[in-house]
Amino acid sequence: MKFGILGAGSWGCAFANLLVENGHDVLVWARRKEVVDEINNYSKNSYLPNVKLNFKATNDLNEIIEFSEFLVIAIPVQFIRDVIKNIKVWNIKGILNLSKGIENKTLKRVSEIIEEFTNTPYSILSGPSHAEEVANKIPTAVTVSGSNAKLFQSLISNDYFRVYTSEDITGVEIAGALKNVMAIAAGILDGLGGWDNSKAALMTRALHEMIKFGKIFGADEKTFFGLPGVGDLMVTCNSSHSRNRMFGELIAKGTTLNELIKNNKMIAEGIYTVKAVVEIAKKKNIEMPIANEVYEILYNNKNPKYSMVELMRRPLKKEWLI
Ligand SMILES: NC(=O)C1=CN([C@@H]2O[C@H](COP(=O)(O)OP(=O)(O)OC[C@H]3O[C@@H](n4cnc5c(N)ncnc54)[C@H](O)[C@@H]3O)[C@@H](O)[C@H]2O)C=CC1
Ligand SMILES: O=C(CO)COP(=O)(O)O
Image (cartoon, rainbow, N blue to C red; front, side, top):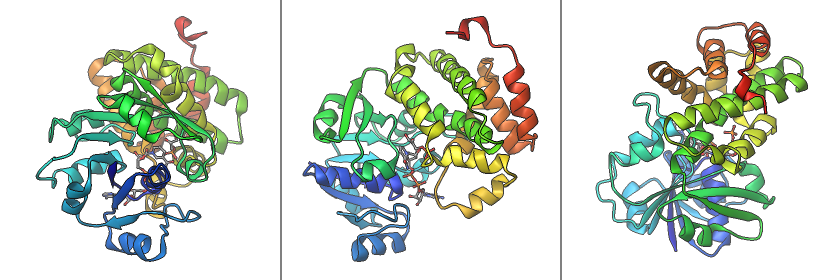
C-alpha cells in the first residue's frame, strides 16, 4: 500500500521505516527543505539521529496527496491545522493519526480537527511506543481505533510491532493526550530527586484523573486500563526517551519553560495540551488536580517542590483507592 506521512519528526521517521520494512511504499512530508534534503541525500534526520532512514521525503503537500492511498499524521497537534488546511483535494482512502494532544485554540481532539476539513475515514494509533525503540525494532504493542482499525492492524503489525484494535476512538485520543501532561508531573518528581514512592502514588492518581476526564466525553473506562492508557502512562512517566518527562525533570531543576522550548527541537506535547485540559476542566467543572498543578508550575511559576508536596498531601478521593 502507499502511505504518505505528514511530519518528519522522530515518530514520523520511525513509523515510515516500519512501514517500509512491512513492504509498503512510503513518502514523508517534511515542513523544512533542509530536512527533506538531509533525508533524501544522506538517509538521516536530526530528529532520529542514530537511525538509517529507508524512505524519501518531499516538501510538496500536493505530491504527498497524489502519492498516498493512506495519509498518516505525525505532526505535533498544535501545528496540524496549519498544514492540513492547505490540502485541497482529499482523494485518499483513509487517515491514520499518530499524534497525541488537544488543540489549544479550539479545545479539539485530532479527530475533531480533521472532520473540519474532510470526511475521510479516520483512525488513531496510540500506546507505549517511543520512536527510538520502535526504530531499533524493540518489541512494542499499540492500539489502533477507527474506521480502518482491522485493515491497519493487518498492514502495520509485524514481529516486533503488535497492533491491537479498539472501538473507543475518543478514549484512545484522550488517553494519549493526557498521559503527556501527567508525565510532566512525574518528571518533576524525578527532578526533585527521584521520589519513587511519590511517583507511584502520582501515577495512580494520574490514571484516575485521565479516566474521569475521558468519561466526560464518553470514553470507555476500559481503554485507560489498556495500552493507550496505563501502558502509555507508565512508559512516558518512566522512560529516558520521554520528552514530556524530561521537560518536567528540567523544570524541577530550574530550567524555564521558554528555555526548554528554545533549546529543544523536539516537542513535549504536554506543555501545550495542559492548557486545553485546564480550560476544558474549568468549563465542564471537572476536578483535575495534577493537570492544574502542572499548569501552575509551567505558566504561573509556582514552585515545583512546594506544588508537588502539597498535591501529594491532598487526600485521595475514596473511589480512587484501588
Ligand atoms: N517521538 C515519539 O516517541 C512519539 C511521538 N508521538 C507523537 O507524534 C507526534 C509527532 O511528534 P514527534 O514525531 O515526536 O515530533 P518531534 O518532537 O520528534 O519533532 C518535532 C516535529 O514538529 C515539527 N514542528 C516543530 N515546530 C513546528 C511548527 N511551528 N509548525 C509545524 N511543525 C513544527 C518539526 O518539524 C518536527 O517534525 C506528537 O503528537 C507526539 O506526541 C507518539 C508516539 C511516540
Ligand atoms: O508518546 C510517546 C511514547 O508512547 C512519546 O512520549 P514523549 O512525547 O513524552 O516523548
